[in-house]
Amino acid sequence: MEARHFLACLVFFAMSSYVAYATDPNQLQDFCVAIINPNKELFVNGFFCKNPMDAKPEDFFFEGLDKPGNTNNMLGFNVTPVSVLQLPGLNTLGISLARIDFAPYGLNPPHTHPRASEILTVLEGTLYVGFVTSNLPNGDNKLFAKVLNKGDVFVFPQGLIHFQFNVGKTPAVAIAGLSSQNPGVVTIANAVFGAEPPISVDVLSKAFQLDERIVKKLQSLFSS
Image (cartoon, rainbow, N blue to C red; front, side, top):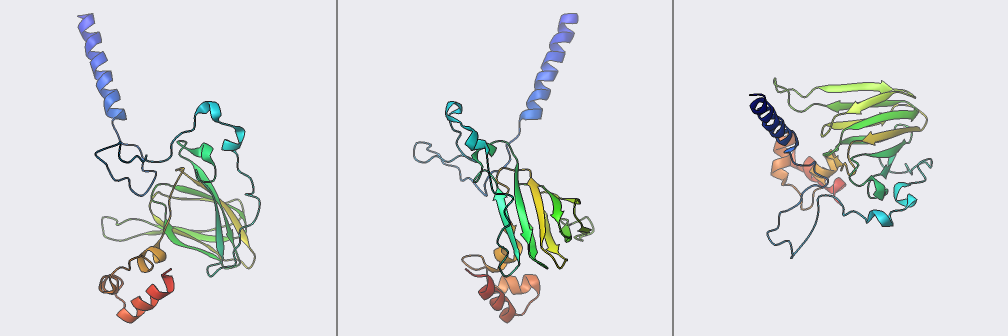
């Protein structure tokens, strides 16, 4: 009887383990088109791994995050990323970070990270930050916003539209930690009005309730 009980428990735990781990890994890129013949093409969801015997300290090292980014642009901000592209040792670790510099009244415009949540710490200056929820049961999109000062921390959930705006008269600096080695970024205005080929003017004018001339003007501003 005890043997049967032990066997039943063993089967239960085995099935529980299968259920717990039978899931796909997170995406590490926008898409990965399936191929039937792996001998024809090969691409992985992420990056290949170096032979551990060939690894060196430099693979886990990045320098220069103390240097301010160039904010001399239309929006007055600059992002210095430290993702797997800059720091190969991050591969498979699921983390990255970035330094964000803001000129006075500089803006990191509304954007999303499709593969990461973000935690932001203000090092210098005063930032107005916020994120917008996906559609709530009542159909609304709620804004969560806060003015942050030096030492303050704010979290932006994965995939949600968010922004940071320097409301001070002096430069501001923040460090962002992200829960992906390759979080990706979709800047809303660039993606909508600067897509190539362009999204139909009819679609955008109806979606945003704008005159077609305004849509065309916006497309001309954001096109590359």
